[in-house]
Image (tube, rainbow, N blue to C red; front, side, top):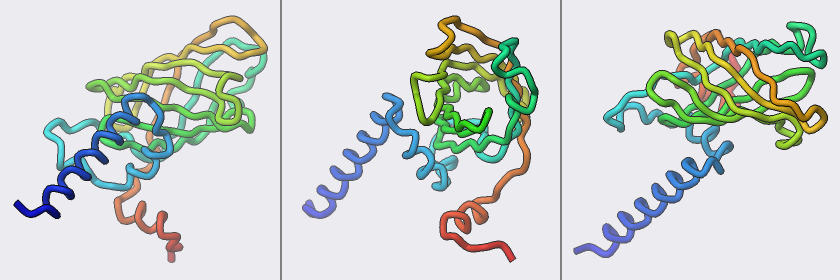
Length: 176
């Protein structure tokens, strides 16, 4: 046997194992952002719903800290690698992160403040009613208000970015 072939196989296996472990341990938000540009849907037997792209999201609450819809609604960007996803959205000029996994047609995961992961955080479950609509609930609390709150969370997909558009974005190629 060719030693180069064996070493390449072992290295590939180790890289795959490290990536899978990082994904399962939820230590890979930035990894998903990078890997989402690699088209892997054809490799796996099970095809997961494609949720990558731009979304409009709005979460509901009765909190006096977020009285206005404009404080709870924003554009969001979701990155997806196989069944794992990572997203970012804004609320009251703060960036929030969402990270999770697709389970059939449900998105299950956690969300938190990007600057202070223990400042305002929680979990969520969203059902994909179709490829451009997500509806579900969030729960969470902040370090100032030690009470668990929750509410509905609704998402609508804006536009699909083609793979070519993603590559141009990565390379910094401007639109004509």
